[in-house]
Image 1: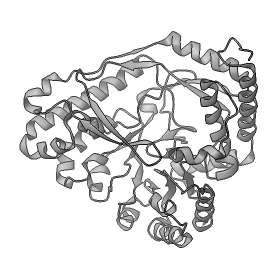
Image 2: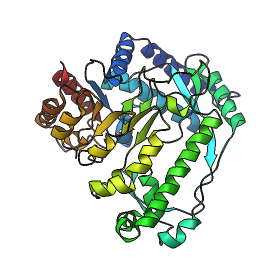
Image 3: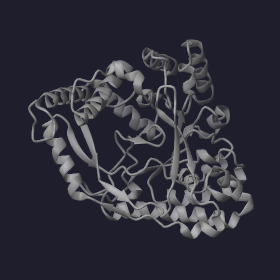
Image 4: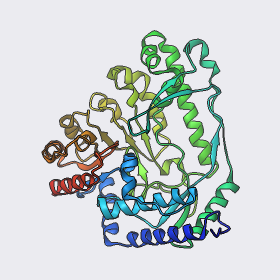
Length: 419
């Protein structure tokens, strides 16, 4: 098979370019302009229709029959699957995902770690997917071993990044716009990192047993995360996430509130020009007072570096809202399946985005029950119908092989959420 100088066969290259052209065609469809305008008004807390999204990536093997791969090379097959997924989201799912004619290449940044070894034990589900895991935390006695932790340092390989961008530009040959992007973390919440270092049990008990050491630990993590963010800013590696960007725990970044004043066109983004996600799912078992003492102060200081904050993921935020709401640049709040929608509907109003995450189990059971979907959406409308509402179906790992359920959920949501 003929190879090109791009490390991809001529046959595979033809397939990739054809798919890229289809993505570009989709990006020009009228729906994309409407969705972009709707997302922007929504995140700017203006009057807008409710937004509907469904995340498909977790379905894994169940999606494979819908995304038949034709390429033969491993690199080409990975790229092909990415492009076919983008096309599938538009043609078969029909949610409010925005498709643009871009392809991101992230800066090649590497870090040193914390100076200790974090061991992870993993377990597979019935489909062979490695979803479950357990940390063997390296820090067993926090007061005496905290000094073992070292703040991370980072480096960037600019030449490698530029070479990868050049390669992708040649592969797409103008069909997609290749952009170097700065996406280096999902969350700045810190508690995920905390339990990987000291374990979940100690994370809970240390607040009672060794509170002073726990405060020093959280301050260490806060300073480490700040140092990472400031290094990236100094190196000019940040890029705006105020467009068709995944933000928070499922939303889209479209807003006119960012970037902040003073960023000239073409300049690297600053931290104050970006959205940031803060969350603390791991602390769901602690009291609001413990959250206020051991977690919130350190998150709040981090939030000051950024332009807008999206708070929460799977944790119920209603019992710690009195603290979270004090974050001055808070814009969006995750309303998980375990959250009291009545309380949060009253509290959020139109002052923040009400980012509702329904339980994925309702479309993952053996039989699809439309009445359950409608009942769930009715409850959301009852409590949040006047809010700046987005409904995002995420953490979906099976639809029992019936992919049509995803589009059906979108159709029902669109029908019921019309204003």
